[in-house]
Image 1 (cartoon, chains in turn green, yellow):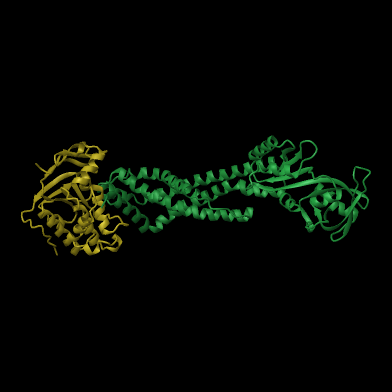
Image 2: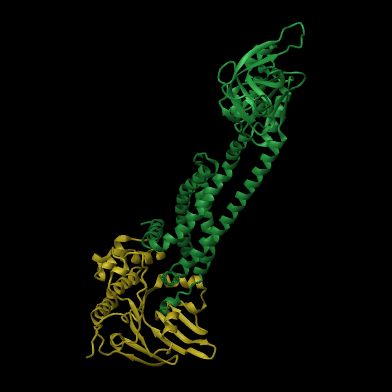
Length: 378
Length: 230
């Protein structure tokens, strides 16, 4: 039998036949690895998870006309710069002043499906318009004009060209918009209805873009878009991106700090456990030295046990840590995370490294055991 | 040349002379018993023969090498190569089987050989108990595993500390019988014991008192068999 095979046999026998003792050590390592793996998963996933959450607060990029207006084609060309994975939605707007019950009201032609992606916080009493000649009315407009869902309302538009007649369309009110913001002062119709009402050439006044990316990436997109299309002036919604960056960096710093503290606590916990394991085996160490074990031989045996425990604890911790991260993600962010395979070897390596470092001190003391103590029966 | 020679050995702890100018020799193949009351210096002498302690003064020649002057690492090598240890408390590794405990000594010495370890267990009559853990063995069986472990590397000296101290008469006889067989094969035996029945079996007795050799007695009726007193 090769010496290495015997070493492995001794190490596995020590772990398997001293199950209750080793289980305590394994548990200490596994708990550390679980929290480490879980926190690292959350740390890595926080920008993505929080990015998705932040997108609920509206667009973080605005396309404005470089001069007077821009077209849908301009918008689509600029949007092609943004990665499709990061692009949450893009909503075009064309604003015109219309009249309802002879009152001048601001009307926005838009894409109703896109609005729901870029402004998911909009609260609609009723439904979004789904067909032509349907209209969404802002709460303030509805209150001042005493409009309600299901009613029909006549919307008129007076062209700038006085020689032309006013155009009129009867709209069905499908919903009342409640945002708590300026959106309540508007009425919203589809882009087709707006074109039909105004008979103006197709153009856009503004576009709201929602992109799930960090501030640096967003700035890169803005720069690229501004360099690529002279009709569009892309801008970041500083209020949103700046607060996103601040919250994200603070959250990540917090998770990182907790991870480091947990790592340190794990090391202390494992070191304490290994110290207890070593001290209760002093007579065994003394015996081994008495029958000829060298210091390096003793170190190899205990380090072997530590490495095996670290590896097992790492594997266990990776699996349980993922479950922990999944639990946190589902309960805090309301979404699932995918298993990061790279984290498995990293957790195992860190567990082994932490256990090895934690074992060093007790093992060093183990080699100082006096074999004569064994002969004295102490 | 003697296998072991103590030359004016002193071991002094403060005012206490644990060994006080001790000189004796042990020839190759000899069976010696070291006896004496508690505190007489038996353990100190045992530690020095076993290369686990050094004298304050004097020389200890083991197979021609003065172990009193060797560094600790070298002493470990000498102990591993030349001495087989047997303890009163057995001191088997509790998570290794009887067979693995014997192989452990091979592992530290050279290359583990399962077949050879099994033969050593057969020799002490424990082949059938090879796969048992120490906790599954009786005291006598554990001591026989300890003997198998001590002899597996064919040491120059078997050094036994109270080898029958925890055994009943039947197992005491088995262990002494094993010693006799080892002696017949030419192994040098040094047995430290309180037990006069075990001490009397040896070819020569060294009796210690207050760190000095009180007397040395040669057993004229040496047979290697234990004679129990009523």
